[in-house]
Each structure stands twice: as structure tokens, then as C-alpha cells.
Amino acid sequence: MVTSAGRPGTAHPVLLVLLAVVSVQFGGALAATLLPLVGVVGSVALRLTLSTAMLWALVRPRVRGRSRADWAVVGLFSAALTCMNLAFYASLARLPIGVAVTIEFLGPLALAAALSRQARDALAVLAALTGVVLISEALTVPWAQLDLTGMLLAALAGACWAAYIVLSARTGARFEGLDGIAICLALGAAVTLPLGLVTAGADLWQPRAILTGLGIALLSSAIPYSLELLALRHLAAGTFGVLLSLEPAAAALAGLLVLSQLLGPLQLLGMALVVVASIAVLGRRTGSTLSAAPDPSG
Image 1 (cartoon, rainbow, N blue to C red):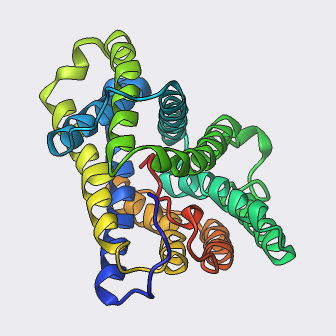
Image 2: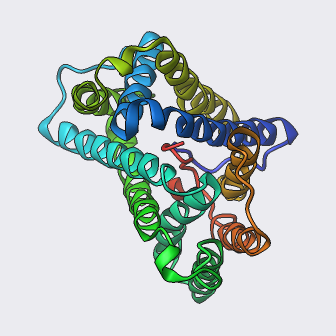
């Protein structure tokens, strides 16, 4: 989401952002339960299609009269969002959600640190990388047993998240209100829905799949977008960045409660390193869109 600097938040907007963070990660955990039924592409297709339907029911974006440059920017924005969701959902099929989200979080963290060009931020990224090594169990598990593909997919999702953040700012500068994200979701749905029908077939329209998809669309899109829009009117960007840094911990909680995924002590230590590093980098940013871009792949 795009925001400008605001005055420090009170308990009310802070609570709204915390609820949004938890909602996104529980949406991701719910998505993991859909993967065995309709696969990665089918899950992404349902999430984007149903999210589009919900958003377009509330927002009627202006489509006509757009320039080629407008369509190029929103097209790239949609490509980043779609690729991020596909990579993240594919990583969920291989990794615990807490691990996947922690690795994915390196994308926006590295971007914020690179743009700040401060030595302390470079050290924070190094600490975060150490945390990822711990959470991946690379030091305690033989490499042959590590799911390197899953970790690479989560890292790809993180890179796409970083691209999404940059393109989100550019889209917000060209499109009014929620027009940009509404068109972005629609373009992603137009690409993934036919592919989902091919890969999942009739399973995509099972009542269980539709209901789960609706839950994902609500938890990952409709609820967090609404809560963040309300909160960011009164919340400083730096405060928002600190709250956003709690996403890996929220993902671990969602994984435990929804998927019965229990992380070990070293993995929890690694997650803590990433959270602390994220707070160090994102918490100091003021008036920046980079510290105000929640995970859109949950």
C-alpha cells in the first residue's frame, strides 16, 4: 500500500495494522490447505479471481482513457504480484509457512537497506541472512535433506515482493484510489484463471475449493486492505514498518494453529533475527512507500 508520513499512531491504528498482519498470514495458512486440492496455479487463480470480484464490487476503476505508459506500469505491477503469488504458494507446498515468509521477507528488507545506503542497514541485512541460514536448518540438517527448491521459490517471491513495492508506488502515482490494485488483480486473474482451469479442472469449482478461496480472498486481500487504509490515515510510516516486521512471527503462529507446523529453537532464533533486522531498517523510514507495503502474497 502507498502512504505518506503521518503522525505517530495511537493504539487504535496500531491494532488495525496488527489485525491486518495476522489476517494476511492466516490467509496464507488457509491457502496451504487448498494446495492439495487444486494445486499452486489453481489456488492462485481462485485467490486472484475472488479478490478481484470483491474489490470490483466496491470499486469501479476507470479503464478507458488510460495511456500506454499507464498500462505498461500496471501490467508490470500485475506481473510482479502474480509471479510473487505463484512462487510463494509453490514454496508453501514445500516449506512451513513461517520459514517461507521469513525467507520471502528478505526481498523488501534488502530493498529498503539498499536504498538507504547506510552501513548499519547493511549489517541488519547480514543479520537477517544469518537468521535465514538458521531457519533453513542448513547448519543442522544434511544438505541433501534441505528443500533448496522451496527456499529458492520463497526467495523468488521475496524478489517479486521488492518489485511489487517499487511498482506499487509508480502505480499509485498514475491511478486514483484503489483503481491501480483493482486493475492489477483483474489482469492477474485473467492470466491465471484459464491456467487454473487447465491444471485443476473441475476441482476448481468444488464447493470446498470455492469456500476456501473466498476465505483466502477475505483474509489476504479484502480485510487487510480495508484495515490498512483506515490505519494509515493516522499512522507514521516508520511505525507501520515496525508492525510489518512482525509478519514472520504471525506466519509462524498461523502455521502452528492452522497447519500444526512447529518450528525448532534455532528456527525461532533465526526468525527473531529477521524480525529485529526488519525493525532496525524499516522502523526508521519516514514518509516512505517502502515501509508501507504489506505482504500481498499471503
